Image (cartoon, rainbow, N blue to C red; front, side, top):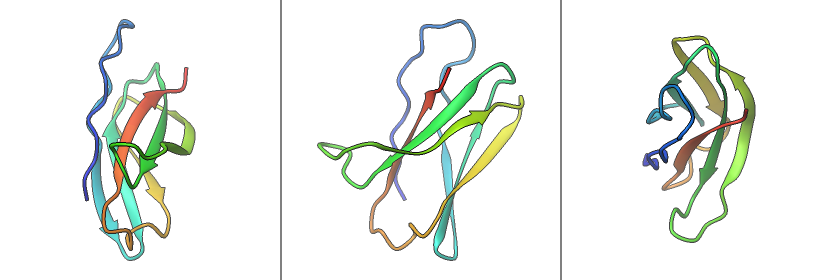
Length: 88
């Protein structure tokens, strides 16, 4: 699996982390380190050059540790790209 690195955030606090991915059955687990005072969204696409980025989960609260979200039934795609954003 491939993913896109995040862009720099100019707000105070940690920049967006690089997500890691793990296939479990037909699902992909997307994990990333969070700050406890941030809310995140995770987007995915199959074409990082000119594909549409789709938010598959939103309002993921940071807890100061690692958070994992599930992208269901996506492990069959040959390539999948992920990126993070701040929801707030």
